[in-house]
Structures are given as C-alpha cells and as structure tokens.
Length: 460
Length: 87
Ligand SMILES: Cc1cc2nc3c(=O)[nH]c(=O)nc-3n(C[C@H](O)[C@H](O)[C@H](O)COP(=O)(O)OP(=O)(O)OC[C@H]3O[C@@H](n4cnc5c(N)ncnc54)[C@H](O)[C@@H]3O)c2cc1C
Image (cartoon, rainbow over the protein chains, first blue to last red):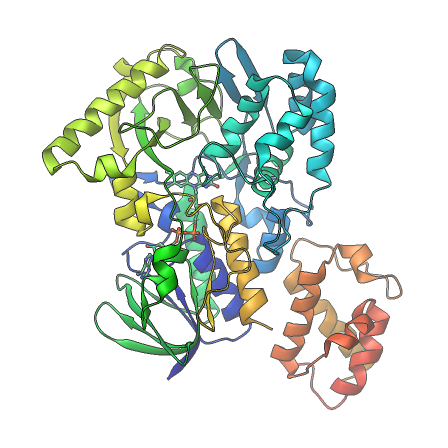
C-alpha cells in the first residue's frame, strides 16, 4: 500500500494539513514520535492537573462572522464554525517598561489611544506606521525581499523606548531572529496581537487538539503515535518512502514535514549536503507555572498577559547565561472571559533562555539550576509586581532542554530557524515542509501553514 | 439531476465550506464572493468538492463560470444531468 502523503508531526501544522488532505480523500498518515499530540503546543499532567505547554493565548482573535482574517480563513478551510473553538476573549493586556506602560485589548483603537497618551509626540509617526502595516502584503509566499523592521520603525518613530515596547510582545510571540525581526513577520505579529487580539479556548489546548485530531480521523486519516520517522528515503531525488524508528517502511508519493527544515534534511537518505549549511534557530525560553491559592486578580494580577522589561531598553537575544531575567512574559490564564471561571489561579512566567547552557548541565545541577533560575526570575518580577510566593500551592518549570526533548526542535528553538522557507520546498522532490520553519508562527500561524502548504503542493 | 437539484448541490457544498454563513438568502445573479465572502482558497474548495463528489474536473479557465449561483447552475447542469442527487 502506498500513501499519497505522509505527514511528519502531529503538532498544529501537521494536524491541519492532515485534515485538508483527508477531506479530499487523500490517503494520508500522520506519524508522530511523541505519545501525545500537539508538539510545541501540547499539554502535560502533573499531580492531577493538566497544564498547557505552549498556550498563553491564541493570537488573531476576530469575532464570529469575520471571514477574511487568518482565524476566519483557518476555520473555513478546516470547516469548523467559530463556536466550535469556544474562544474566550482576553480582558486586557499590557506592555510594562520602567515608567511607561501601554495597555491593549481586542479593540485596536484603545491601543492607539494609549500610544497617543503615553507618547504624544510619537502618535503621528505611529499612525503612519500603522497605515504602512495595514497595507502590507505579509502573506506573499515569494522569498524575494527581506526587509528588517528596526530601520522601518526608526523611520516613523524617534523614541527608542516606544520602538522597544512595540517589539517586546511581537518578538516574544513570534520572532526567531535575535535583535531584529523580518518586517513581514513584524506585520504578521502586529496584526495578530494589536489589531486582532487574544483569546483562549475553553478547555485549553487539549480541547483544540482533540477537535483537530478527531476531525482528521473522522475523515479517514490515519494517526500513528509514539513511533518517529527515522529516515526519509528518496530515489532519483524524489521521495519514495519513510522508515520509522521500529524499522517499518511506509511507501508514499509525498512527505510533508513539520519537524523543522534542518531537522527534516538531516533525516534524508541519501544524505543531503545542504543540511549542514543551514542556519538553525537559537531562541528558546524557560517557563515556570505557579498554581496559586487565590484568584490572580486578588493578588494584584489583573491583566491577561503582561510583556515586561525591567530595563528601559529591551534586548531580545539568547542570554549569555542560563536565563535572562530582565524581561519576560507573564500570563494569567484566569483573566480571560470564561463562561465559568477556572477553579484554580494560575500564573505563568516566561523568560529567554540559552539551550546550550541548560543542555550542558549534569542531571543534579540541572534540577538545582531550575530552582535557582526560577527564584531569580521571581525576584526580578517582584521589583515590578506584587509578591505571590506565599500563595503558591504547586509549581513546575520547563527549559529549552525540555522543549528539545519533547518536540525534537534543534536548540529547543520555539520559533525555528531565522531563515524561513516560505514556499515550503526542499531540495528533494515531493518533500515539503510546513509549520515553524515555513514561516507562519504561533498557534494560528502554524495551523495556517499546514493548510496553505497542503493546498499549494498536495491538493492541486 | 434537475436544475433545482444542481442548485441544491451547490448549496450543500457552500454549507460545508462556510458553516458560519447564511446561505438561505443567496441571490442567483449576484457574485457569490460578494454575498458570502469567498476567497480564492474557497473557490478551490468548491472545485475540489465537485471532483470529490461527482468526479468532475473544472479546468482553471472555467472557474469564472462559478462566480454566481446562476453561472454554477448553467455550467454544471449539463455535466450532472445523468447523475442522482443522492451522492
Ligand atoms: C513555551 C511555549 C509557549 C508558547 N506560547 C504560545 C502562545 O501563547 N500563543 C501561540 O500562538 N503560540 C505559542 N507558542 C508557539 C506555538 O506553540 C508553535 O508556534 C506551534 O505549536 C508550532 O506548531 P508546528 O506544527 O509548527 O510545530 P510542532 O508543534 O513542533 O510540531 C512538530 C511535531 O513533529 C514531531 N516530530 C519531531 N520529530 C519527529 C520525527 N522524527 N518523527 C515524527 N514526529 C516528529 C514533534 O514531536 C511535534 O509534535 C508557544 C510555544 C512554546 C514552546
């Protein structure tokens, strides 16, 4: 038996691509090495509590009825109704720097007003920048131009603090590059966070992932868990089969891989010279979750998400040490408009981290370092926010090493390589990539990436 | 299939690809994309649904015939006349 397409990875991009292919009666199998679906956006259970690994918030919220937005397109292409996703909108989020704060909601005019009040001398420039952003075609799949953002922003805005404040959330939620950001990526993220906004599905990531997996299987797709791809085999530079870790060989006409570009090339047989020459991603995070015995709001945490920098200049780069405590993201899952409030309070703290430093630690030191870094991150946080240490009833942390272990992404790089392959092509015929390294990032981005690569290469 | 049946076929497809959309009030002579916000990705879906359900290939040069409901019906009726609605 021969598959039309084998998809590598049951993360969001792989599942979405799978649904598209199964919908049109393609013989399709998703092969996932982990025992859970979800990849970078999965979930895990500790002490009877289920935690989302990725999800702080889903970006790109648009209300029911808006169909031309990324969310609208995604729902339509996967044939879900808006209600199926059970999205609950954020209350209010914030970018907090020393002496400056910008709040934002899912109403862009609110944010514009905040900028006008906080940076009155910059609002004209900001408005012009917004015009440029809104008229920019960020979804063009041609790889031609690679404009970077900083010079563009500097041509409209003269206050570097405002530039850094705009960068902070957009970089944290979708930038594979240190220091600067490709402008098309800046536009994608600006629209998805400021113009559209945040929501969370009731039931968290397990709910959305199950929805996708059930639809895929219902349409006749096959899902193989706990058995990774060992090699991708080609004959005459064209894909012909994959070999699984248990040595089983599956024949296929095409392969769509979501494991990352270099990660994919590394599995090709015969070996590809190109694999060694590609840039790999470096940006990764440490994240700590704190279950607290009160509502975060009652502890002084009333925002949905806070992107903060404890210094007036924000530096998005791999730290020289295990983690960088000078900036971070704070997420209070409770502060979304759920029909029924979650039973427990949950606060999450994310900081930039260095994969190599974590990976190099012996087991015993690794555990001690987690504890130590978490304490340092909290100390820095509490210079800015109320102390909740006495309210913590459960806590857990994961590091770039954890991310690598469970998703296979080199360096635990959450946003993959800075060099995106927008058309999804590889040197091997009928081998395509989707997801993180194709260039659409985050939950909605990855899902759209799977859809568009399936449409472009495997359905016509 | 009768003309009415063909119209129903299109409505069924539209209901599937745009579950949030009200398709009961579609006007046959106004462009579909102006009434229910269809983009090029969605037209591709209509074409693929026709292939899947009836084995009909619509070549790209004929996509323009699918712009309105009336256009769809007149283009597809000859192709579907010997078929049953059931599928
Ligand atoms: C801590 C954290 C927080 C995040 N927060 C947010 C957020 O708040 N909002 C947001 O929108 N996004 C967030 N993201 C980003 C988002 O999770 C990702 O962009 C998205 O999930 C990427 O999906 P993907 O399908 O491209 O890749 P992946 O999810 O990585 O999918 C790849 C899959 O391939 C599998 N795989 C790898 N190698 C093999 C092999 N050899 N054989 C078989 N399978 C293999 C992996 O196990 C994985 O399941 C976060 C990510 C992290 C890590």
